[in-house]
Structures are given as structure tokens and as C-alpha cells.
Image (cartoon, rainbow, N blue to C red; front, side, top):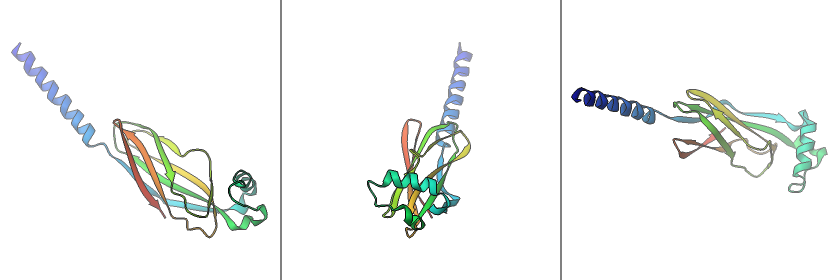
Length: 154
């Protein structure tokens, strides 16, 4: 009986050590991608511009003949998952500025497997004169806790 108690105590210590290492070495890193912002003139994709202009016309006075005044900006953020748990839903929201017209697509979310790097992209129609630098807030749940980090993409 004494040996069984010693073996069970050693198994408990090993399990607690592994659990502690797993919990305390888990980290998620959010950073702007190397090519964090790409710009494409709206005139390069007139069909997409027409769709966005039609959808946003009730809020913003967009004239289709003024297509040269608009640019499609795409921001990219990388998420490094250095944990043993996959992140099933990572979401990103962009902090808009004056001159931002409409976001393309519904949501910016992705899943990031354990020990991998994933990315989220957000595309928006903006006035050409607008500065492309934006703050993007990325949120995720890890071990039941909500985490948020804001990164500036320039």
C-alpha cells in the first residue's frame, strides 16, 4: 500500500507539472504582417466598386463617375498560436476613420491551429486621400478567458 501511495503521488506531481507547463507557456502573439497594407485603385475593379457604391449609397453620397477618388485597402494581421490548444475563433475589428466608406465581406474571423500562424484580412473601400494606417483589435478565447489585443497596421 505504501508503494502505491508513492507511485500515485509521483503521478500526481508529474500531471501537475505537465499542466503547469502547458498553461504557463501558452501564448498568442498578434502582429502586423510584413505586407500589412495593400492598396488597389477602385478603377481596377469597377464591378466591385459598383456593388459597394450601391450598398453604401444610402449612407454616403458616392458617384460612380468619381471612381478615381476611391481605393480598396486590405489590412493583414498575423496571429501566432504558441499553445497546445487550437484557437477556434479569432475575430478582428477595424477602427474606422473619416473617409472609410464600406467594409467588403461580413466578418473577419479565422481559426488558428496549435503551434501555427494564421492571418486575418480586412478589405475596405476608402477615399484615396485617407491615411491607410489603422488600428485593428483582435480578440480570442484561450482557456475560457477572453483576450484582446490592438495592433496598428501601417
